[in-house]
Image (cartoon, rainbow, N blue to C red):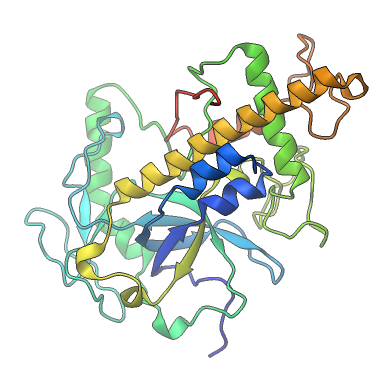
Length: 340
């Protein structure tokens, strides 16, 4: 069987995030930022891979997928979205859910007896392409339709809970790390500077799409009228999506008693986003220091130096940052730590 360079959808896999590459790809390579990110110890997580968010190409560096981290316990309550701990779906041979839906039956049989899908637990990640290909003979498949049908009761119960409070769900899109601009410990000038710096770095380093820079990939985040049918339009938020390696041979990478919680993966995402924020602040501070010392680049003429603040900026100047924030409101981090 021919090997695909990207994992097939509707399969279970083990993933591990690469936060060091995420930070270095943005050009945040100062010693303090590197020390922070290299101090992380990313775990391997069991996930269910849904449909890709883009059509992968032969020269893609990664492919965006919606993924569901798998748990071994009932899920934490989420009152804001009307979710209770029992909104989980056992994966056969697990049947430990007396009042819940019937377990799903993957093909071939699932090797672990303690696993659950969690309701409302989708996030988007960049799954690295494996040039040697993924061995599909190791795949364990599960129909997403079967999963969604068994979550119908959870869906209706969550809607009923929200309606009872006169509210609606806070998110209809896959959730992941956020660079929310709300409640930040920054003044408006600093916020604009960091927003523009992030956009510039993402464009400069070719992080708006999965295509390698220089091979015809788009390198601008200009808005267009495209319907983006294939998921190829440049997206300023791409660099903030978790970059992960994936393996289909799940038993070779995890045992039943060492499967970590999806909550831990959320914490890892939050941690790397916080490191990126601090790195951007350091980068901006360095740019201001250089600009002050060298009049020749004052006013933002240097390629990466943050632009000066102006009250007459166009409405779309910080579009990239706002897109990132609006896309990932579910995991909003409300506190921007200052650089050390």
